Image 1 (cartoon, rainbow, N blue to C red):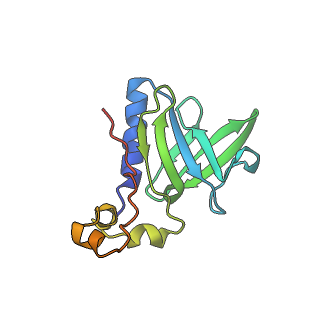
Image 2 (cartoon, rainbow, N blue to C red):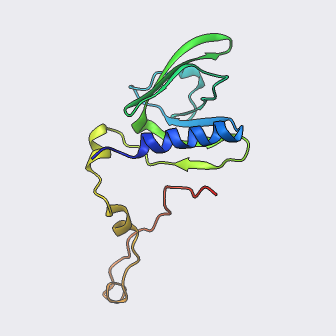
Length: 145
């Protein structure tokens, strides 16, 4: 089954453009990510992907590519969709965050509903048995109003 992630990224991008906001892409950088390394901080980079900041923007299902300027120099950027951590509007921070998969097979191996099972609270019987309850983590999606 195809991932919904590239479709959601494109939808938030279009929402930003329609609303007059500046879409920013937060990316976890790995060896497949083509960005200027001097702008990477703590393994991540935030990219302005607005129409004004990019040239030849292509938002495909597997990668996002475009040309942009860093300190006045043109640079080709290629970001695997699997490495996108978030897309959001600079002006208000609204957008969507994603789990970053380190390999394409990781993204495809997640079963629907597996995340809900990991987040389910422990039952009273499990707590009384002395077993530790599973670690609860917040959802990785942000609601957009």
